[in-house]
Image 1 (cartoon, rainbow, N blue to C red):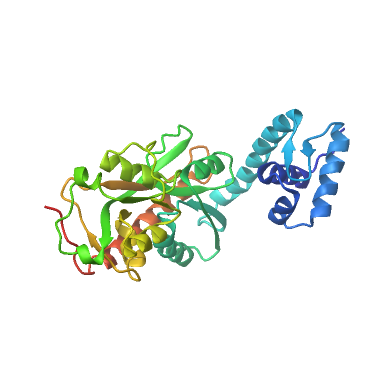
Image 2 (image 1 turned 60 degrees about the horizontal axis):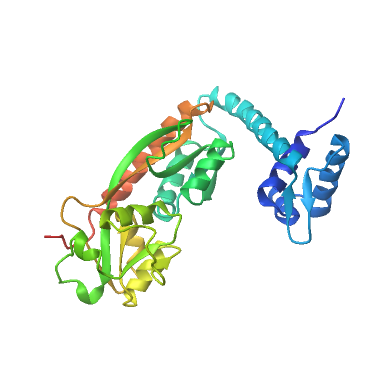
Length: 311
């Protein structure tokens, strides 16, 4: 009988995901030689190679692809056994792996973590900040417990809990503070700065302006909202940011902020998790904690100086 260890399966999964022995070893908290030795021992037991090795990268063989897919399912089931035990407790404790998209994380996450750790003293929150497609993939593969994203994601295996809706505001150079707020048709003709491809907020901004995402926008993209706002402050153009980002992103840039006329551009923020997760009940409760933290954050922002409104 072949003796496969759970540890070896986790090493295979890490190497398949990272495609690099050094990064996989770091993720598994072991040395690179130890990881390499474990993989070779497993391949010897199987009688066939799982990975193709070159000087620059590591990739799965055809057999390795099928093997790694089964490994992911096994590891997900093993993790869910632990989740099943946690779900039987009166309160949530242990590790909570939560993902957040970059246009939400810096603004909402501190309040969420404070609330969660105050209410659940034994909770160890692990955060993953990345784009929505990656969060969905890692969630369905069992590497995350939940994620905070813009809805809808329309993934049949995932539960969606809408938390709140927020507006987008216009950020433009400080010298334009007293000028009329442009309508979406006028905005389309302006030098509009956007997040780079892959961000759902980019797509939402383009949709509001009725601009095709395939049109070339050379030199008008940034990797973060902070970069976009600083570019506006330098006089390069204008941009849109979510309301929750205003206090953080505009405090150190010479910019002005204005609201559009109704109907304003908005997004719905929500939390998603696997419908099959044993922690589904606790995650639904956590979504309420996130909602309350967001409401507290927005209430605190309500007292800031008013924004110029569109005509």
